[in-house]
Length: 393
Image (cartoon, rainbow, N blue to C red):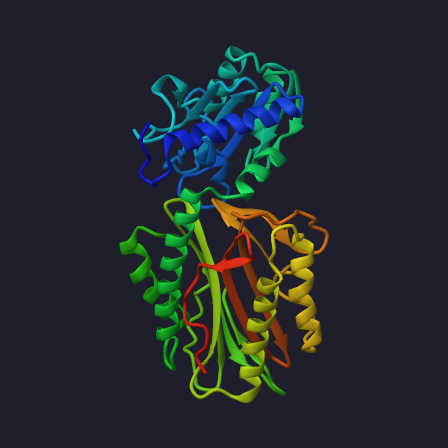
């Protein structure tokens, strides 16, 4: 059957679709309608790619009646018996893990989805919808209006469960992505010196990322001073848009996420600009300690909530408020942000093959520390797959 360019075999893709079809049958569904978004965005492309290996290159444009519809969106239809159709808005690459007869290329994507659902007998009864968060309301209304005998159900948990545990091929891709992200953040942290702007720091990272065929998802950046008159320098659009150069005595933090061959890397670091102060070091070390405490709690059979409690408990023990830019201790990672969420209330049981990002930002008195690592759950605990430099003090 061969492999796709990412290194994942067609047989693995077929196994994924077979498991999704079996889960649909178990849930009493006639099939699944899976929706993903492409066109240059890295938000929510993972479900269709997980099943087929496809990502559309066409960017979003508003619909023009009679000419095109749902551009930048891809739809995978999967019956409970395992029959598949992939409806795409541009030519599918030769290594997509489907036969030519299973791929429908259309400018009028919505109309093609409706026609294929009818052809596959998915025009009535309970159908699981996966990706409703990226399905435009107007597109949903067209599909639901044309197929008014469909009983739409939430199919998202089926793909979330399948995607949570990674195959050996996926783990290899995640390790490659994390190695690239580690080299990228090393280059960025080296550039974060007095006189450099946030944009200069990002440019140093892009010099590493782009030649390696990686894509930047985002880079959260901030710098500032703590104490009686604290300052913070940041920007929103883009996040590296502040023109203010870094200066001695400031703290600096950066979080980056990006993609290589579809799989994400995600990590963060902090450093002093110039000689470190004791207060800066306290915050930097606190963030590291929270993350490492959470990682040390990883065991197959424990819950995501319990792991989060360990890391967040460490933060409280150190005397830092639990307020943060993200209320949990982390999340799964793969073709996007996967299950589980390392947060109170997530009772997902950890299993070997899950990939988890542990992250924590701590703040106090205008000082900030930030740290994030990625691990794979093993039979004994956790294997760290990020290897960027940890300390700059």
